[in-house]
Structures are given as structure tokens and as C-alpha cells.
Length: 279
Ligand code: NAP
Image 1 (cartoon, protein in one colour):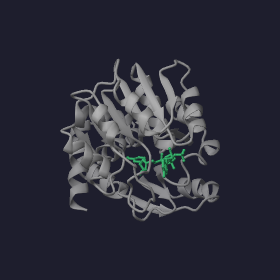
Image 2 (cartoon, rainbow, N blue to C red):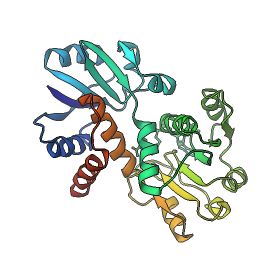
Image 3 (cartoon, rainbow, N blue to C red):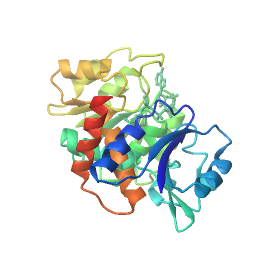
């Protein structure tokens, strides 16, 4: 039995360190390594993996959507998001899961004490990560999630995925953000604005002033560890968290799928976090 993370590029991935630390904390001698798989090479990879005893893998760019039609079964939450990050071989069948949304929720609960039930959230972005986070928040009972995106059409498409009406599309202009923030107990950045190596930055942070007292800010970005958004939130005394806890929690939940049993999640998250701090 062995586990992998596949993608292109993938050699920078923190998954081997995270999973290695959790497996070793469990006393399990199961190798987990990174393998470069280029776009279009997935069918060959699946055959190779089965022949070489790979019983599960994490999928990263560019495979999270491309792998869907090659799977034998897709967990409903992953099907709703339209992407998987965790694939397990179960009795000869490849089964896909997504732990991005549930990982974000677990990080919010553990790191910020945030309870989505009945909450109103301003979520920036409408890409893959935004989709997973928005659907997970709606599923966990958030009363309203404003999905604010530069390309409004993309926000509309995302919101149409949750017919409950809990997801509300909006633009990313300062005035719109201010109006949404004023009603929200959480602001989540799921855009790549502020990410190292990505062009673009928020033009202003005035919308943070509109957040009610006690509201929190969660930036999915973890490189850099402190984005300008997080620095501005902290200057205003708002509880703020970067994307590392989400990275940790999605790995904890992925490992439960790989091993097919519940784990002591807190202990696993602690082992994974300690490994991240050593990188
Ligand atoms: P994606 O699918 O490419 O989506 C990118 C989003 O950013 C889109 O909403 C896009 O808006 C917006 N955007 C990009 N440049 C912009 C600009 N100059 N101005 C305004 N909006 C802009 O990417 P993703 O996979 O969702 O990832 C988004 C972020 O989340 C990345 O920083 C990634 O590192 C982070 N992430 C973190 C974790 C974690 O575990 N912590 C997991 C997944 C992702 P348009 O639709 O208008 O283009």
C-alpha cells in the first residue's frame, strides 16, 4: 500500500510532509510521495497506480476536474463542487472525494471558533476554492453567503449551484463589498489577490471597517503567511487566519478517506501542523 499526491507542478507540494507526519504519528509505515503527472496523462497514471500498489492519491492542479470522468464513483459533495482532491481505490474501484470545503469549515471552527449555522458570510472569489467553501458553508446552514467576484457571471454560475437561495452573487467593487461586509460575521478571501507570484492586489481595504464587531477574516492564501488583507484586518483588531489551517484540515480529512476509518482529528492536525512548522 502506498499513497501519492499527483499534479504538475507538484514537487513543491506540502502534502508529503503533512501526510508523512500524520502516518508516522499513527505508527503506520505507509509511503506517501509526490509524482509529476502531466495534463492528459491521467488514464495511464491510474493503470500504473493500480499495478504499483497505490491505494489512494491527492489530486492537485491540473487534475482536480479532469479526473472526474475517469472515476468509478464520486462522492455527492465532490460531484456538487465538480472537483476532487482525494481519490481512493476501494475494492478495485476509484472513488473521488473533495475535502476542500469540509477542510475550510473545520479550519474555521478550530481556528476562529466560527459556527456557520445561521451566519451571514462575505466570500470573495468564484473559482474552484470559492466554490468548495461557498457550498460547504451553505450546506452547514449559513443563512446567506455573498459571493463577490470580479467576473459577476462566474459568481452567478456558482450561486446557481445552491438552489436554496443562500448564495447571493455580487461584484467586487468597494461599495458592494462594504454593503455585504456590514451584514457579515465572517469575510473569506478565496481570490488569488495577495498570493505570492500572482499579479494584483486589493485597491483598498475600507470594506473591513464595515464588518460588525467580533467579525473574523479568513484568507485562504498561505504564501505569504501574512497577506495585506490579514495585516489590515489585524490592524483593525479583527480575528484573522491564513490558509495553512485549511491545508492541514483538508489533509486530515483526506487521510480518513485513505485509511477508511475515523481518526483522532485534533491529534492528526497537531502532527501535521508541527510538520509544516518545520518546513
Ligand atoms: P481560481 O479557480 O483560479 O480562482 C481565482 C479567483 O481569483 C477567481 O475568483 C478570480 O476572479 C479571482 N482573481 C484572480 N485575479 C484577480 C484580480 N486581479 N482581481 C480580482 N479577482 C481576481 O483559483 P482557486 O483554486 O480558487 O484558488 C484561489 C486562492 O485560494 C489561491 O490563492 C489559492 O492558493 C488559495 N487556496 C488555498 C487553499 C488552502 O488549502 N488554503 C486551497 C485551495 C486554494 P475571476 O473569476 O474574475 O477571474
